[in-house]
Image (cartoon, rainbow, N blue to C red):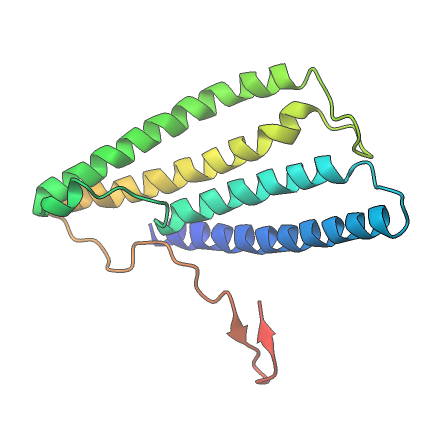
Length: 188
């Protein structure tokens, strides 16, 4: 499981880097569009669809990273009043429900993508099928979240059975920013 943990943490690191790059690209393109529209009176026709595509990817990458670090919004109305095995059991039940939803999405998204692929984007410089435009990022995130949930369910079952688990089993974004060996600046 240590290998899987390292692999998931490395994937999360790449997700965060790609997400950061996409945010920067989105801001630059939007500023460029404002300048083109209000200074040169000439809009870039594909900016809106491009920004929507980038926003979808940022959202899916962020959702997957939040799933990996267990930082999604949670409702603790009931779990705060229980403890011990009951709390672990409730946590496992929630994880199994999440896993079920993710499996359902993974099974049905390819058909949805195929239906959506019958139409294409209208103003992008390259002709992208709408299924890839809207739903492929979701399928990508669902697959990563599936692997993550299976990873966490493994440890939740071990906890419920009273078996030992490592203290650091929760995935963390480590070493994202670290000092260069020469002491100058920051390496990513």
